Image 1: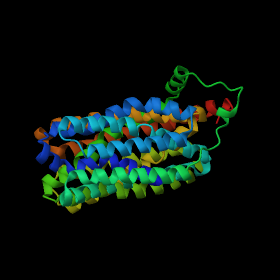
Image 2: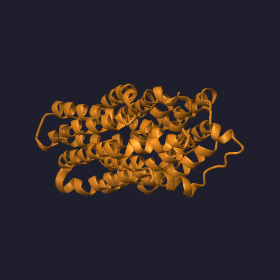
Image 3: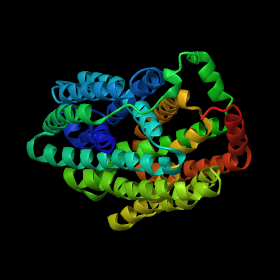
Length: 401
């Protein structure tokens, strides 16, 4: 169920990038204003995520998920009614608020239902839904935009959300959460939770690694359809599919494979998840150097597929790693903060690309992302060698899991 919800979640947030040419034409948006659509969403989403995580650690995670679905579906429909650029940006701000509640609650709910032996695979299936949502949203918005105008896709996606929310309300159930049922166990104060996270070096390493990757990945998500449109003269539908499919179908396979591999590798010791993550980042970074040359679209797409697969193999370990070093009563808060930092970084990446696009071009920007991926790999290896074993010993020494 969460696989389907995740698919819709990312489809709604990323569909807009596939209709950028139509927004330029109808509303007269500049490249910087187009960047503002992505950054406005991500920055508001970032600010709200920690509070959403704290709520999901204290109240019903399933109810938070359903409420978030209803809210973001309503905002998606309102997006299709936007008469000008200012209203469109406002709708993206509202979407950031509405969608921020979903991911911390969903990931924590999966952790509630799955032990470490199956947790990586379960979270991989969920992340696969997020990636397929990018493909579905990009392809659908591009096709409907060419055939019926850019607004129709938002009406279709919004209506689908209400139907899916009704189904999810009958399927989703909260998992066992002993820390909420124990009357003698008071809730951990918010500031104490934050302090506990900051004092966990593995968590800090994951945040740094994830933020660095988010800068580059959100550059891709936001600008890749326009890159294929401008560089190779593709139609909106083809550019939308090429700009998302090359990234996300391979990423979906990588995440599924990575989730199962992560569980298997962790049998030799949970810190090996972090080693696996670092090696995958290092292997995928050189693929982006293809943007330095003038290659046909097929060659560029092949390189993106290889990069995306390797990056996804790495990213599939993040959530499982956090579960190994963060106690159950703080996981949603931890994920919320990761979301915050990722989205702040991703929003900055989108804006930087929008500002630099006219000067150095998207090809140079995309090639430079390889440096960010390399850095993330080195941070992950540092976490494996120095931080994660110690943090696991400290957590399990407290008797909390």
